[in-house]
Length: 424
Image (cartoon, rainbow, N blue to C red; front, side, top):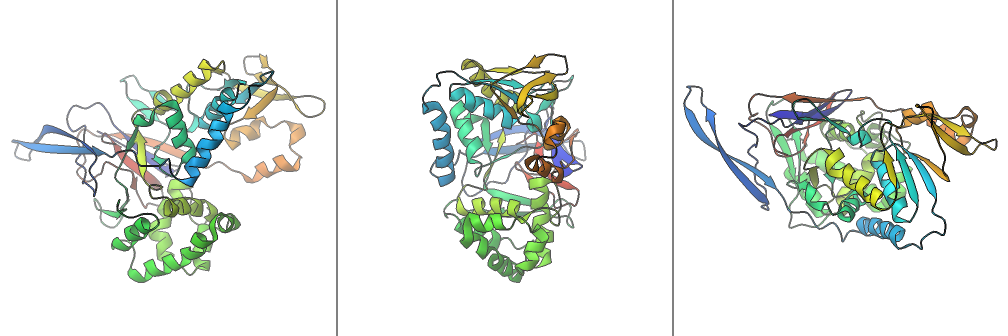
């Protein structure tokens, strides 16, 4: 079996290897049953005798996401590209970077009747969700990727591509490791019978391992301004770190230590004293406002094949192009400072009517033309720094006893999240 997870500077990802014994792990059933797969196999006891073991893996039905305000807005915007009047002269748009940002940009430009040409420096699609196959046929992924119900744009994209069935939905829970009790976990279980935000409140109140009742009450009171103030309040907190905001709201430091180190690491791979509270509140608001917002799904295979290729096929079908091994060396400018062309490493230049850079900020900084560096808009890039993340896959020769068919929050200062990819 294999494990996969994430860390700032170390992303421990546990991905499944093709081992015949123990390829599916027992999973605690939840309040609502999903689709079950029971695979019997034999486990050798300490005395050498074979004893039967029944293993259960459960995937849950796709939740009803289409009736949320955010999903309806995303679907409406997406549909507007397809229904827009066809341009008299389609634009040739050159896009740098075939991660999900570049791929979706090309997809929607093609939907609108334009001709996107997507350039990817490497020989693999996906950017942050790229993956590689080793000599044994196993996949190494760039990170441990999950899809929340609160991701309206990507959920809508899955539907448009007709690949909703490729998401494997898990029990509506958040599961945290107990650092002082190795092998034990603390769960926040969201009941299906309650609407948001009551399901989230219930999940917090029912958990007694991580927070005391006084801490829960102070935490709830601290969150009230965010719940009542909505998006304007959330955006106004951008200047405060998670740690500073918690103290300002009178939330005990132990809440930050017990819950928000894990959340900060999972969202941005940095600590609560470095992360803007706006990032946390955006996620929390979605989780509190949408019944299935915090529900998670795993992709049923490697992202380049299972997610990226359907987007590429869609782009190709509408006359666009996706080119791998097309690294940009320089952004060439006209005399007026506008983009003239992209110069590639192979010496070729490619021109278009419009240009999009959909690369990580550190790569864009390297490409930024000298004439643009003093422009106030681009000077803001100086404050943006990428966070180094290492993804680690560990293969084991047997099943781990204490794990779940779910994403696990490590609550470690180093490790972010991890999962047993032989079962998810």
